[in-house]
Length: 173
Image (cartoon, helix red, strand yellow):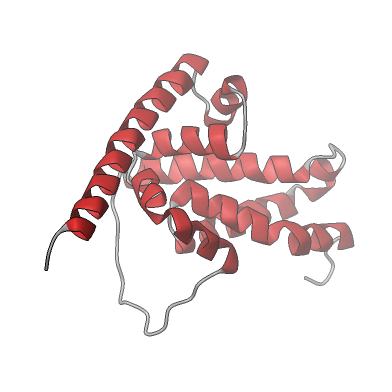
């Protein structure tokens, strides 16, 4: 990064891990999260002089990440490609902490992308409905309806997940 503003380099070093975790919560996939984070930081680098003067570069990056994610899933429309399976697994320490609630994360990952984004922004990022609406370029009413639908699906899937686990545990071999 020669010729890059030292303040930008410092920001990337200090906040990239947290932004990567945020990307993971948005996408549900560590590889997509890395791509999303890299693209957002690249865009931040291009706009650093303007964004730095506004005193909230992390807010800018998170907004870019949310918008990029929405635009990517609009293009893909649930299309998933799988390459070859890697020989050795990689686990990020921040991602490993989510294993305690693996069923909940699986249920969240199974939601439609817009519902997942609304729930992540509302409950993980603690944003207000109007802020979410602005970020995702949708109305506040849509935010509320997507949140309600997403929560209903999460409750249903979480109850189903817990029922399957307890039935499996109590079943004789």
